[in-house]
Length: 69
Image (cartoon, rainbow, N blue to C red):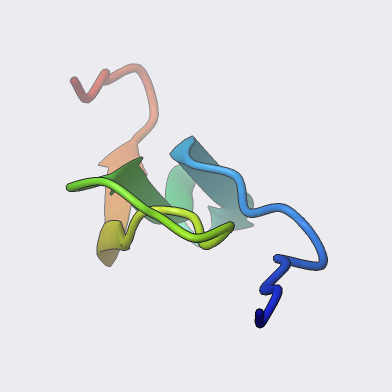
């Protein structure tokens, strides 16, 4: 009889990283990354279900006094 074990854990959820910088002309430069992960399907024999990850990175420059959504 063989025994299989999973030696750890894996998290899933939403992760947002933002790096703000002040640029010339009173502009705000934002570099950001968004990662969404979730478990799909089902696991078995001590192995967790597969994890799907979708991510996006981008950069935006915002003039002083303006807002982005």
